[in-house]
Amino acid sequence: MTRLPTRATPSATVKPRGRVGRSRGALMIRSWLTRLSPLHSAFFSSQRRLTPAELEHLRRGSQRLTFRGPVNLPLVGGPLLPLVEVHLNGRGPYRFLLDAGANVVSVHQRIADELNLRVVKRLRTRRVCQVEILDLGPACFQSALVVSEMRLDVDGILGFNLFREGLLTLDYPRQRFRWGPGALPITDDATLLTYELRERMPYVPVQVDGRTVWCNLDTGARPGLIVPLGSRHAWPVVAAPDSGPTLWNQHEGHIPTQRAQLSVPLRIGPVEIHHPEVLFSPALEDECLLGSGLLQAFTLTFDLAAQRVRIQAEPAG
Image 1: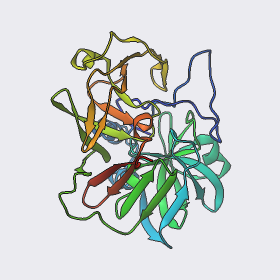
Image 2: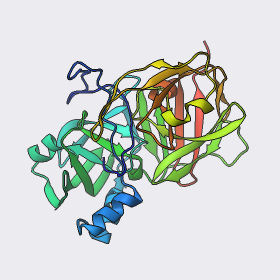
Image 3: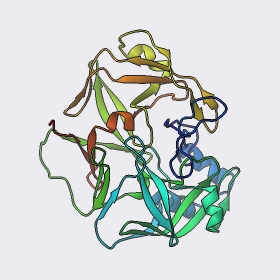
């Protein structure tokens, strides 16, 4: 995905069919993919890379969406890596990551070459390509603009920008992805949260130690909670942080982290999580991420039009 400046989304490296691997002797974490930001938009325009119309098309993901029925697909990447199978121009299936921590659609350069995708623009290190038909089960995206990436560790990424209407459910416990018409009820239900779209990605308020921290629901990250290293003194922990996993970023390379256990609960709406592990990352500056390591116990249902999300835990027993 494309964004400047870099932001990081950790999770274990997946080879092109979802196999976990290592590289250069360090624990490989899913490429901390980049997202399209206003700064990157300025880069595009100043370098005369994308026209305003092309940039808007890339932000929307596709020109047209048609449903042949509700989407109900298995998640095929395991509990920490929500992958779904898609078809591009009738070919596939390819395994794409459902990533609410991304705001453009990306495809591995290998697949772009394999399908001979039409290149809309050649950027410095990437290409913007056009996919005529992207099929996600019975949902059909027509004329989708995607960014090809040489160093993706999955076949592709479905950014949150692609989903703009209906109810979208990521059911971690049952390993299902559902999407179709509908809306969450207008009620004071405590399980409902209003989320903010920031650069077309969902952020929710999280309560910790009497303060509110806005976190991206980063379904593309395997760890549970990732926060800036510079903010470590603001997070109450059981003991001083020790060495955490080495993360990897396509721009910075290998990034050491620190890890600790919170000494206070983390609350997301009605959900209270006791003493979760937190990773402190030097690659993050001012945003916090809730990854699949923490979200895997819940079902997330997004009302895309109303910008509300229901977070439900699996019933005990």
